[in-house]
Image (cartoon, rainbow, N blue to C red):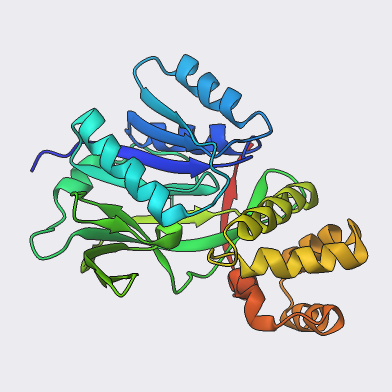
Length: 295
C-alpha cells in the first residue's frame, strides 16, 4: 500500500532538544510534521521555525495551545486526526521531543527506507505498529548518552482513523471507545511489530532541564486537579519545596549512576512512595554498549 506519514508531537519547553528530534525524523524520510506547542516559555518555537527554514521541502503545521492542562492523550489524538486530514496522510507517528527513532544498531541518523518498511507491515488485523523503546542517560554531562536495556513499554505508529485514540504517553492506540457512566471505556488496538527500528528516549538531560520538567509537570497536575498522569512530578516537587534546588542535582546524579539502592534511600528520606517514581524505573535497568550522540 502507499504510505504517507505525518509526525505529530505535543511539546513544552524543549528548546535544548526539539531541533535535533525534528532533524532525526527528517533524516528518516519524514517530510510532514504537526507540532502543538503548549505555551512554551523558552526558545522551543524558535527552533521549530529554524527547522522549517533549514528544510524548505518539509511541511510543518504549528498549533499554539494556550491551555496549560497537560492532557496528552486528548490533545495528541485531536492533533493526529487534524493532521491526517490536513496532509491527506495515511499514518501518524506520535512522538515526544525527547525521542529518537532509528534503525536498530545504527548509531547515526539513517534514511533506511522507513516508509517502505511501514508499507510492508501487515495492518489488516491490526491498527497500530509497535516500536521497542528504551532510555538513554547522559554519560558525560553533555551530548553523549549511554542506553539501557529495552523497557516493557513500547511506542506506536498508527494507521489513523476517526475511531482511534492515541493512548497516554503515546504508548498505544485505543479503539471502540464508549462513554460509560461518564467515563470513557476503550479497547486497546491490536498491534504488529515494526522490525528493525527502535525509539531511544532521553527525558532527563541536565539538572536544570529536570528542574523545568518537574515545575511544569507539577503546575499542570495542579491545574488538572489530580486527573493527570504526573504523580512523579508531584512527588519530586514536594522534595523541591522541602530542600530547594539541591534536589535537582541529587536526582540527576542518582539517575546517571543508576543504583537502585540510592533511589530507595532518596524515597525513604523524602517520605516518597517508591511507586510514585516508577517513571524512572528504566534508569535502573542494565546499561548496554549502545549509545546516542546528540552533538
